[in-house]
Length: 169
Ligand SMILES: [Zn+2]
Image (cartoon, rainbow, N blue to C red; front, side, top):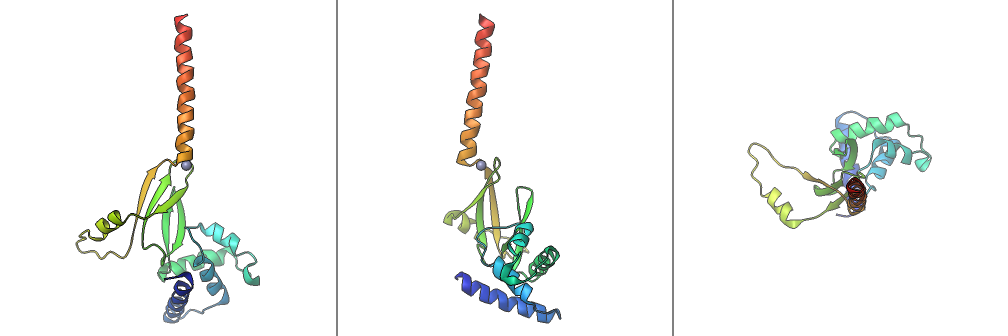
C-alpha cells in the first residue's frame, strides 16, 4: 500500500470515527492527519506542532495538536511508541511489525527487517490474545558511538599504562 492510498483509508476511518462520536471533521484535523501520514519515522508531538505552524495557512495550536493526537490514537490511526524515555507517535499503517535498533549513546534508532524474526513472532502462540501488530526494540551502540567508546577506552588505557610506568620509575 502506498502513502496516498494509506492516507485515503485513514481519512475515511477518521470521518467514520468522528461521525460515530458526533464530532466535527475540521480542516485542521484533516491537515494534521495529512502531516502524520506523510511522516516516515516516529515523531514527537512537539515536532508535529512545530511542523504545523503555518501549514496550509491554518492556525493549528499546540493544544489542537495534542488533543487530536489523543483522538487519532483512540481512532486507531496513530499509536504511541516509547523510544529512549521519550513518547513518540507513529501512524499505524506503516510497519505493523518493526524491529528497531536503538543506540544507547546518541539515541538514534533505525528500523530493520528480518524475515526470520518476523515469521517467528507471527507464528508465536498467544493464548487468549489476538496479535494486531508488534515492535521489537534492540538496544546497543551505533558504529559512531561504539567507535567513540573505543577511543575513550584506549585513552584511559594509555593513561593507566603511563601511571603504571611512572610508578615503576
Ligand atoms: Zn549512537
